[in-house]
Image (cartoon, rainbow, N blue to C red; front, side, top):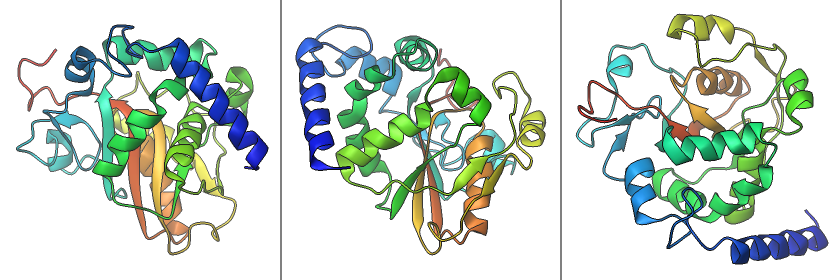
Length: 246
């Protein structure tokens, strides 16, 4: 990224924050994320399942499914910033389906600060790729948008070399087994060179079972990656391990 583009991006971001000083999720004060949204959406009091990123009680390291061996197998660790509900869910859907990618700039600093606390340093970051058909429909890949903001805030190189060759239906309504079948042979390497001997943060917006992240991680390991960590904006929660959680 040349210096002219960097300075332009810096100016746009500064103007954006001047116009929106309240909470990025609910519009309340103070920003960028108010105490209520931190408590109700980001849940710092809860842990994250190390395998799939699901929100769980702090005393556990794995959710029920991952304890039973049903979770991802190739990811070193997965973290999700918050719970996929309420204002956070609306924020993500507004970015994705409301053709409003600029809103993501509002969370770049708090997200990056949280990520660097929760994950070890790596050699680079990779966005979960989107199939060309869906990319043409939406106009942008939200995972690439998140990756570009992490790159801007932390200086981590963006890695390229994985493509999504299979146009799979949305994962949200599928069972775990159907998700795995849905993703079979969906991703492939264009080149092994970017990943050989390197550790990677693999980035997506939402994770449910971790199956999409795991499918990409498997491909990365075939390309010689050393370690792969998942980073997402939101995930579900483990009902069994978080009783009374709405």
